[in-house]
Amino acid sequence: MKDDVPSDVRTAVAADRAPVVACAAALVLLAAVPWLGVSDFQRSLLIEVMIFSILAMSLNLILGYAGLVSFGHAAFFAVGSYASGLSANYISTEIWLSLPVGIAAGALLAIPLGWLSIRLSGFYFLMITFAFAQMVYAVVYRWNWLTGGSDGLLIAGPTLFKSPVLQSRDQLYFFTLVCFAGSFLLLHRIISGPFGHALIGIRENTRRMRALGYNVRAYKLAAFVIAAALAALAGVINGQFSLFASPESAHWTLSANALVMVLIGGAGTKTGPIIGAAVVLLLQHWLSSYTQYWSLALGVLFILLITTAREGIHGLLLPVSKVLGARQ
Image (tube, rainbow, N blue to C red; front, side, top):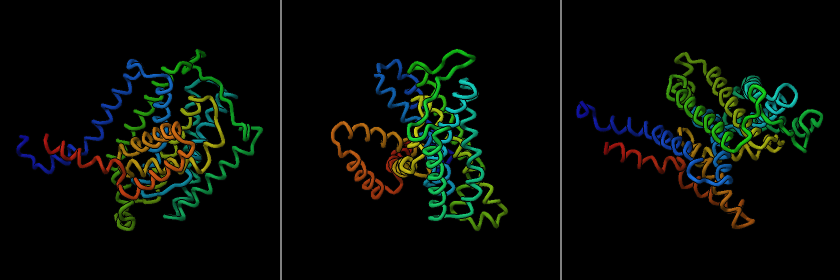
């Protein structure tokens, strides 16, 4: 029966499954990290990579699949962190409450902001998202009575049914790993389903999709809200990681970093944002240990990579997966 299937079809199917297989193998390896003798610093770095992978994957949903270049995605990251922190400080430290509060805050903020933003496209969409993000930054920076202002917000340690949780590095690591795996699987289902196909159609030819009867604005708004909710999830985890929320988490520079992660890894791919987040953070830590001009070296490297590999690192690895698929 296998010989009845055309070789190009088998290759395409294998190439499409390759990212999922690679991520499954990576998840197994990540789950084994605590037993591999990895140091606490390296484990903390892996937690940071997974957090920002979730942020990059969420941005990739609207950038890579809906064609919406957002320069204010950090706003939802910050709102998730602050909302969950305020919930823990003033309502309850129970993680089953503070976690959904942070995610819901990001999603609820995205509804009015998305409703206004998706009416624009291209450069204008980028600038209005940037303006909204700077408004969020101004709020968390100036509202000392609520957010702690420039000093940031200390977050109470989480509990589960009044018992402290996420206190050890192992607990926090596996909590982050579960959220990371869940986010990837959710986005995989969304992208591979009819909704994801509709987003790609809207990105490629908006007029045609509208003529076919698709409510383009509704699809864009739904993608915007889902992306915001996942970015807020990343913010919640980051707040639990450091037990601190900083106004810098809402600054445009974080949005720029997330954008760079997606572009370097490969926009419009399932594993590209994860690769990009890992490369950016690992290079940042590595270069900063050798030179005080690490940011300059990192910027030059990113420019070279983006200009020479338009499809990102994932695009460079794609021919390898096709070759492997052809051999199966």
